[in-house]
Image 1 (cartoon, rainbow, N blue to C red):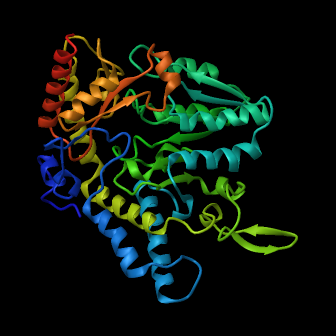
Image 2 (image 1 turned 180 degrees about the vertical axis):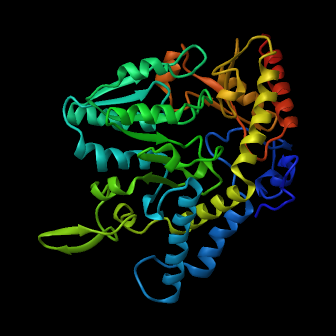
Length: 419
């Protein structure tokens, strides 16, 4: 786990020490050290998380909540403890407000199917932002088709910040839900959640937050935010793939209908009907991803041991350095706020005369992994007047030297394409 060697009261997080916990950085790509700058898509896994998976399968592999034998008891206790760790991580009132899902996408669909499909009716309004990830757009489109709800969208300004005056004009007595991404996976923009939540609650609307990009990087406090739902992906915060969670206020979860129905989510079943299990199992039907859930709890331990304040401060330094260098490059267009105060360590950019996929291929030859494409945010892309961008995203194991290598790779691509 993280120790004093990895963080220091004066210097903060030491990425070179952190890297020692990540076996993947022993690998070389095309004969060159791996520089991983695709953290907004998924992060790498530290050794404690990998070891947690091995430990489960070699020491306690059994189903949870099914038996009284030792292995099942140990697995059940560890799986419940992982829920408690996540609850502490976001300061939920109770671990029973934490539902494990496969990812943030499933968590948001759970809200739509379990709450929206039962609570909303024709003419009700949902306010979303133009910068939402598809995961917080497409589910609500189903309600528009099935229930006749009205979707409204908050625009962004030229710096990629939400137009809050427009947001407040869109609110009405018919607004039942506001869906907002905490931090844009394209622009890095950190949205002002307290102001958004307060305005939504004034008109009686619920708020669902997509925290997939913020949970790994910023301290979160759902009680202080007072959001009604919050979704996150475990694989973006050092956990295994196929993990995520939904936070929901207990009174809402108690009233909601199950997303999936079958084993383990029931209290009793007769031929006439069924009653539901207590929270959170009411929403975790069937055999869950037990080992992965336990390992997610270990990932949370790792991040809390580092300290989210240290994580954010480290990324902030990298972001400032990267923005300074990128903005000086001729022919490079950087999207999103240019003020580091307003964003996370996610930078989408284009190089004039070089397609993002070509740029990503050139960088890969240098051992540098970046994302290229529409980043599951096509409406935002169209709003910005493009189809694709390159994207570099930083995390706890990245360094300023790697930023320098990124700049050198971009300059190499410019020379290759003679731009």
